[in-house]
Length: 274
Image 1 (tube, rainbow, N blue to C red):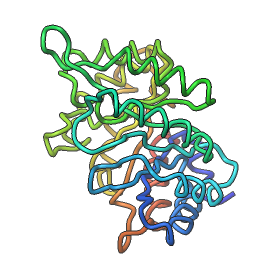
Image 2: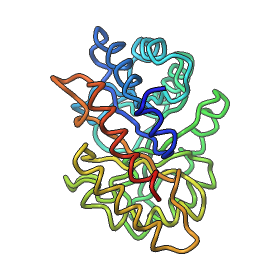
Image 3: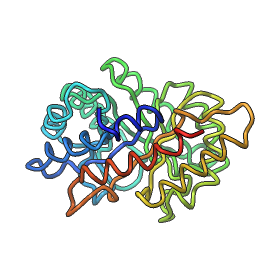
Image 4: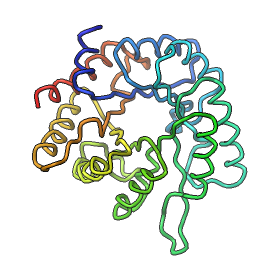
């Protein structure tokens, strides 16, 4: 076991790496680089210029072979760019894609579905989510909720997190700030701390902290979360959050094993000495 892997195992801090799957000729190499750098999970996405869409079946198969039998292969389930309000045609495509992703070898999917309530407030599309969760369960896929969560009005986040936990959604990706704000997890730290207190008490879902996470600021992020652990009696946030990263681990547009390993080690070290 490598030194980086040993640190990560001791700390229990997971790192999820987003992989652009559009270039099939380099995909296997990129997946292997992320694995060698000790990434815990991969989020497979197509069309990153659209902020991530459902990858092709071929891409998932290539990634599965390169990743091996280790769990942690997560595929984006997003049929088109733009908003997260889906009509019947979108839903039919999502259901087709969900089955195809499972057959291709994904372990989990990450999705986000929204609607407007009767009073005009943005909320999670709970009926549609239940349909997709039931299909995913039949296919033996776990489900994560992506940053569509950050579109929700902030006062409704706590109730939404608890309801997602009740529906057995495994993880929620969030920056702690509005989806369209252009801000990242550093700016969202106050909200992330509130969310983390709630998910730690409920013991789920895990927060996947993403949005501008880099080798430099991951130290600030984990130190602030460590302080939360120390200042809140009876609450342990160990295992209740992980980090999600994309551009910060790229070199010339491809995943760099050494940058992944550095991110993993930097995120892990403070949690060992607690």
